[in-house]
Length: 203
Image (cartoon, rainbow, N blue to C red; front, side, top):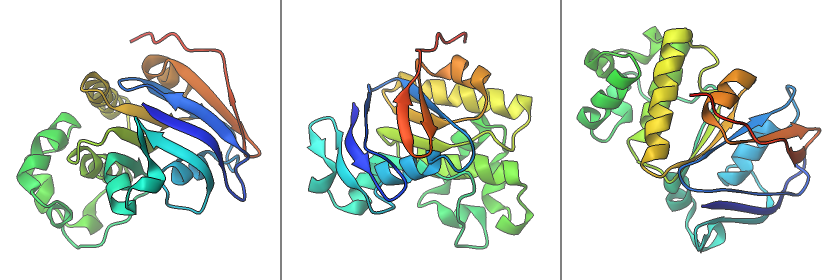
């Protein structure tokens, strides 16, 4: 279980909530409200105060790389530091089944990053996270640039991640998507995080 207690930053007001293993919490709110700030604060990518725990382990008791491997943030537009997709993976062969599940061919590992569409970059950034089998996925609009078929594939993969026990915090502007994946919704407005009425996933 991911437990957030009094987490705050310059933008984010003190936020407290928990995400049990194997479940998804959706996060909604207007642009600039603090949704991405919330995810980055949980991931310890931006300075923050408060406590975040994974099970019995406190974030403060782990090194930053160890925490971010277990609690992994995927930005709406992730960074790329090498010219070829496969160079971003310690073992590209392990990434191929996940890429295929998201509708990308095995050959994608050999593609130049410069030729990727926005949607391809989004899916491959998610694959980069999934190969680590994190305990928590912090996803910022992961289907924002995807068509309906690619979105369905992505949602199927997220259900598989929850089935293996991963907890997911999902920023989405799509209330229908929230209803398909999440059991609860957090609303963020002007840095204030509050719980909304629980969703009933339609699957």
